[in-house]
Length: 382
Image 1 (cartoon, rainbow, N blue to C red):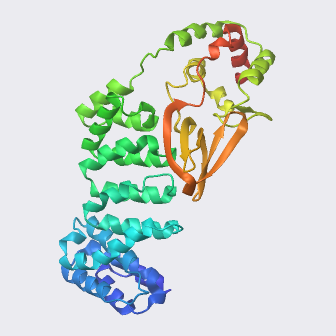
Image 2 (image 1 turned 135 degrees about the vertical axis):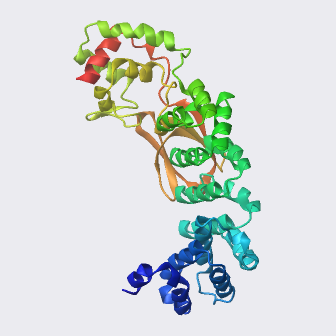
Image 3 (image 1 turned 120 degrees about the vertical axis):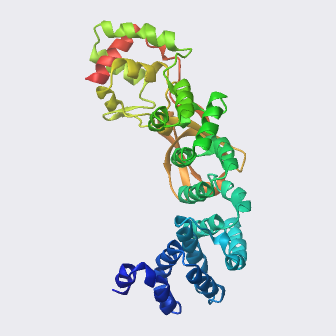
């Protein structure tokens, strides 16, 4: 009931409540929300008083967590910890400890995230520390926490670094990184220019994100997005156009099953047959022939984030390739044709990079003629 009463109290009482509870470390779960409210109110006398408390607390007091929440509250009011000289005195030790925590092995994700938040409240000279956390040896949660702090700093230089790091991020982290890049017009322009110069893969911007950019309020961004994301012909377009004629042929679903078994089961599952490395073929029932044909014959035109090929280099010098089928706090799993999976511990990863290409191979027209494609389509739609 104490927690409910505290969190339901009027904002102007937050500091008084904190003062009453400051020596009751068993109530420490209340310190963070109270610190946030104190920061958000931005009554300078209260902020200074809280900083003095933090400067003189006992060793078991959660100074880092409270300081982080105070900083978040101040930012929400348009202020910053750097506005208070006393904060700098408290932060010196916290920042040094945070950097040490992030260098140690075996530290929990929770402790790492707490350290990341402290760096986020420090001077931007530690931005490089945050960028260095965007590596596969860190958990997804730690990388996302680093991205959140990078976004809060809002430095233009961070955009270029993030853009360069995109190929090295797993799909889930990269999705968050692109969201960060889309928050500021200047960053968006840097990202689009990088795509225009072919330094960044177009598919690293999701279809949903591309649609947002095509309707962006900035005429400059909208124009560049239309140039980059509008449908374009590819070197394999002639093959796709040729195979449209297969739709006019009478397809045999039974023969199509044999085509599927011969050419597709290594990566696609249907019923009890095949391996779920590529997209579920059941979804084809809801698609038109032309869009499915593009996926089959021109797979690199539109690559789904979860189905691109990655190369993971291990610290022992080996390189493993495949798509990332699972991620956990301790590692990730790569999947390859034939249902082969490789489980890799994060601590053993030296680097990870996207190939920028789909796992689906090009060149199926060499083994699937027009009639066979018609049969395959009949089977997939059956």
